[in-house]
Amino acid sequence: MPLYLWPFRQIRRNRILSRGLVPDRLWRRCLDDHPILAGLSTADEQLLRELTTVFLREKRFEPVQGLDLNELMKTSIAVQACLPILHLGIDSYNDWSTIIVYPAEFVRPRQEFDTAGVLHQWEEWLGGESWERGPVVLSWCDVEASGWGDGYNVVVHEMAHKLDMRNGDADGYPALHRGMRPSEWSQAFTSAYEDLARVAERGREPDIDDYATESPAEFFAVLSEYFFERPDLVAERYPQVFQQLRLYYRQDPETRLPMRPQRGR
Ligand SMILES: [Zn+2]
Image (cartoon, rainbow, N blue to C red; front, side, top):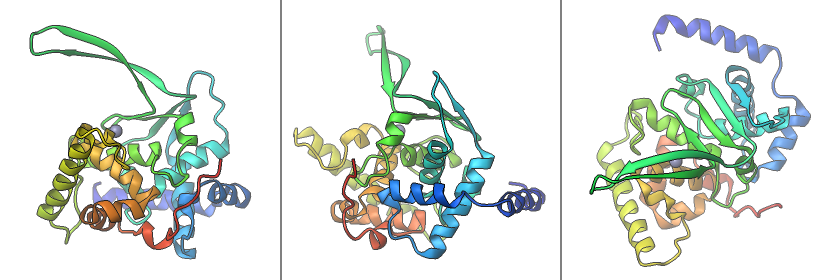
């Protein structure tokens, strides 16, 4: 962002915040509905509420296929989107503005030529999708299934892709902060990726979703989901990845979620 734009953006955000934060009842309900938000310090909860307030004002929500997207639903998306950037700042999302929300999984046509030059066409059902510098697309059913502390979180997943894309293609290699070593990131993620692929190949059901082994980009997105949903599992299975994610997201969910949250519904 050019420096001269900063004050204007900041003034606008201060104005948004001065008009009031997410209302108390809505905020309480949001915290209660999402066990992954348990244990936040007072300062972090206040920061998350401010980020969520700004996010709700700055992003455009576009429900489709007749979905009735109310304030609680929007806030549920916003708060889960803001959790990963709690200590990165709202500017981490300043290169996109729209969230399209389907009622349930949505279909995308796919096609690919095989090595013999034969065109294969099929349909893929998705729970979420992120376009480079474009919208985020979410299935409301999948948003509802997120935040319970069981490892699945479509909002965190798509936000991880968005963060990853800030320095080019989604490749599992987001822009690291000063002081982080690229070699340590690569080493941690490569060895964990290979390990999970080996477990999946042996036909054993891994406790981390092996969709992660589709590509390094998916590995980063899926491990980000587990980092915020089941940090204990990431710390146990892949401690070096946990350490890198802790440095990258500048927070440690394991310290505030010592007990595995129970699924509430
Ligand atoms: Zn993905």
